[in-house]
Length: 310
Image 1 (tube, rainbow, N blue to C red):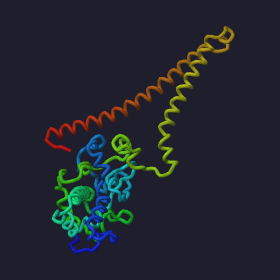
Image 2 (image 1 turned 45 degrees about the vertical axis):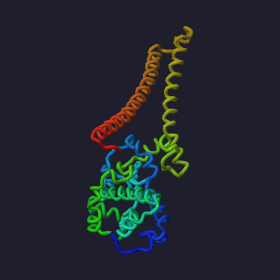
Image 3 (image 1 turned 135 degrees about the vertical axis):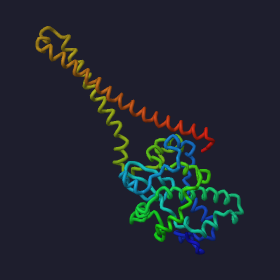
């Protein structure tokens, strides 16, 4: 949207446009979600392989999500709980001069910089296409420029953005980086699969305080301990009743037979109910995972059958 010659990288006055390698290194770090591109062949495990699966900003508000600004490209369009992470649109990506200087291919002489330019261009196109879906209405545009969010450069107007982004919806999956062939991603699932796919403990640490970290870590164990306590308590009651039932005649006389039967039935019923409850939760959890995998495999088979390759 800006065609004026610039001496510095727009939005980053510390970086001179004349230093091509420095510019490419910076823009690559700023735009390329390398870890997600590495995970891309397996992202269908976690999300629908559809690039348009992106809610607009006002829809995120309707879902009760807080829009959190994240400069790290690997967090763009990820969400967890009531938070969704959005990367601001860099000022240089709206500069016509920047695009013609770095992405037209005419000034690349070294193969390494040519490869870097192509990789950056694919990530840039993916980011731009995501904004086509994020900002569908003027209300989305106003949210994008709210203080505290400001994911769009201040100089852009609603009409200007519409003209600028009018063609982004026609960008093909083959023109963007592998990550941007998917829409929103659940951060919890990325963290779950990170040890397998990235060989690291988690994709992104969401809890910075020890209290919250251990709360999240120990919560399922508290459930297990509570479950075992109830089971053991029920077994203790059953054993105690069984001992009384096989005691002496005098001991039997001290206890009413109806109470013994009621205690046995109650303790057994308690254990059975707890096991049924846990079994139902396990079945529900497994069924949800199975449904997600069934859908993911079906979608992948359909896309391969139709000739699409991710």
